[in-house]
Amino acid sequence: MSPYLEIVGIQEQESFKVWTHGYPYETVRWHFHPEYELNYITETSGRYFVGDHTGTFAPGQLCMMGPNLPHNWVSDVPRGEHVERRCIVLQFSGKCIRRGIEAFPELGRLERLLADSQRGILFSEPVAQRAATLLTALLEAQGIQRIHGFLSLLELLAQAPDSTLLATAAYRPDPEGYRSSMINQVLGLLAQNAHERITEPDLARYAGMETSAFSRFFRRHTGVPFVQYVNRLRVNHACELLISTDKPVTEVCYDCGFNNLSNFNRQFLALKAMPPSQFRRYHRLNVLAEAPG
Image 1 (cartoon, rainbow, N blue to C red):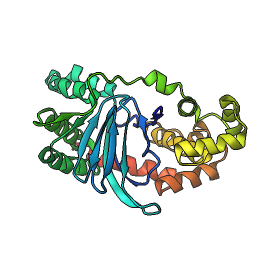
Image 2 (image 1 turned 180 degrees about the vertical axis):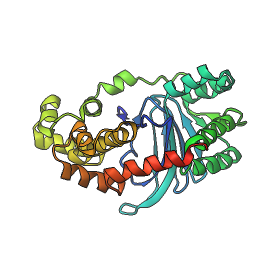
Image 3 (image 1 turned 45 degrees about the vertical axis):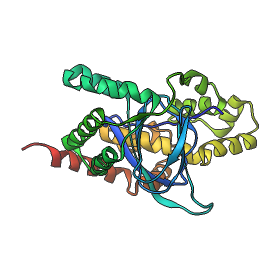
Image 4 (image 1 turned 90 degrees about the vertical axis):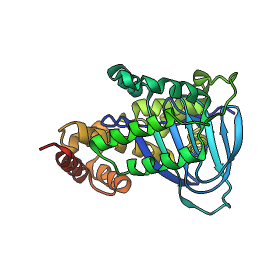
């Protein structure tokens, strides 16, 4: 079965993304993405899959996956039950870390870690415990402290003894082949064009399906209805514009593909728990609080 493409969505003002999710969750499926990933299990046990490797996991497990390496963690949780926080996830792009290595030659010691992650790395329990403290702090860290914590984490992992490579040396990810599957073509098209007035019937025609069949197909593969998925992409793009530009909220609304301000405000509030203007104000207050002086 071809893995699904996950759209990570690291924002322009960030060098990495660190977040938590529960179980079940929409990204808990056999999937891949171009970014590096660290996955620390905080609760549940079950089976995990990385490339052509399969094994069992429990709380305290820490793994690192390189770009486009398919992976999935399936928890042994009874149907209908929900776990609030199953894991902490940190994702960063190869482009970002390569620029860092070019700017700071001392970061060259990370090269082996990055290379090994192409097969997936399982870290020892003592290393995982120390990494968990850093990952938890990164969930709340801001500014330079955020970068310091990130680099400290990578240094810990680069020096970690007793790590295990997971996928066999012969395993080769095939991202172009993965992307050729229809759902990944659809998700890629959405990621590039969510700000346009793209509709579900448009994508149904693109996929060669009736709209009702496409709706079921899309929800089965993403875990959410089409409109909800598109609104999330648009709100995330709005956050980037609110932070990186001085555009009025109304202009941001239309630039992101919403066709009226009231719907934009309603969707933004539902996903970010505050209106767009307050989001921008909070971000600027945080920037001022972090400024030296």
